[in-house]
Image (cartoon, rainbow, N blue to C red; front, side, top):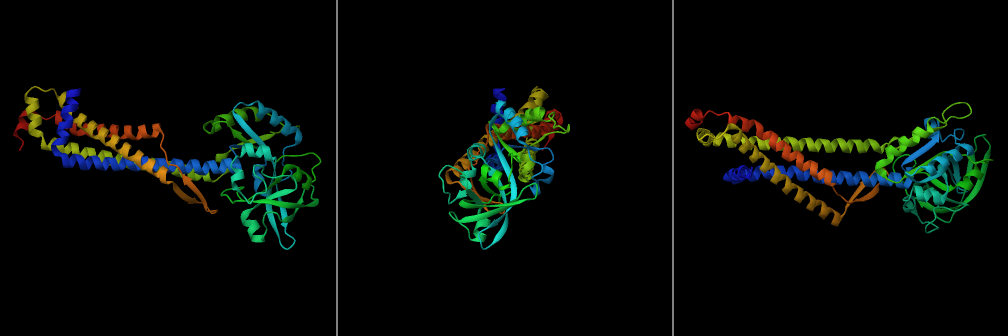
Length: 416
């Protein structure tokens, strides 16, 4: 085997220019795959992390039927105190759950005594929300507190809305809201900070303390719009969701109807479609790599067979078995693919390392969110790219190698 590989390397070096050009073409292909995969994965991690860790969280649980009217923020489809207590007990007992936070979502009128506009609000428990959406605090500008999201009597307003009304941190505003019975209530609040806009549903919401939301909506017994859930391991979101559905789906209310509905972040944000498009693009780049390697190696091996017909005839006349001749040409394709893949992997990793040193800033979404990417590629992704190159190289070598092994010695020796 080592002798065949040694002969294969010598044969490749016979025509150094052709081997070098073909190898460079394969190297460029694998570098493109590695760099694209590193950038796309980093982009997905950054965007998904921002969406889940500063707004949606990993899972959300609502009363059955709430999501069908979520755009209206219905107050008549909320979880009762008894239902929330049952749900809390289930979530606390689940070892895959890191934290959860109850939210009261509603629409209100915001007034600065000169102008009035609509605003979407979330009533939150600051400590629980910080544990469930740890990056939310990073979106708050001009905050009145260092590590506390919002205190009773305060409100966090969406940045774009506040700037449009000329409202800033420390100002006093009035919030007026209707409860589910239609009665109106108003309360004054101090602006504790401005929340940066974020793409997707909920990206332009304001926040206030859950006790204030309960009082503003005149709830005799607190009801909850949604429960945001954070899991311990992001890669196990689907497994945790499936386990929770197995417990929650059979639970019914006094009318014998399902009590809860659970959704993952993928079902809650349109950005998941962007993630799927990126995955398809990655697959497309890999397909191009396969085509490049296949055509390049096939061309080199066919030229090699054509140039060495008499040599092949001589080997056959000396009694070299056809299988050994076939193995020699396959080994040439293997070596060409292997060394090109290794070189491409090294260059690709160096480019990613350089990008990490410099940082790659990307602006995305209507809110012009700026993300600094840290491109990296997993060992599995790197290995699969190299194996694809080597495998396709061997595959491309089979047809020319089979042709060489079937040449009749007499005909081959007559070849000019």
